[in-house]
Length: 108
Image (tube, rainbow, N blue to C red; front, side):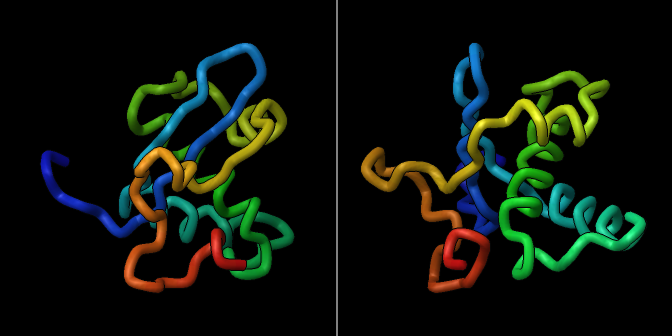
């Protein structure tokens, strides 16, 4: 991604017994959410209605895409092993996950 500043959410993932992950989500992760959400039975709610489900899913997608976790790790396993998904700690000069006032899960 070089020096580009993406407006997609950055997420910090805490899991037990492994180092924390800080991941930059991309369009691919968000599109995967859109494609997967509607195929669930019953369909998953929108990200506004279920922000933690959304953040957990896009963090899983980003972790798989970047090789931070194995491709074989299912969303259900990830969901159960993750202790917390959040926007990066602002005190560490991390990138705002929703710059320019865009509303997202962090604002809900």
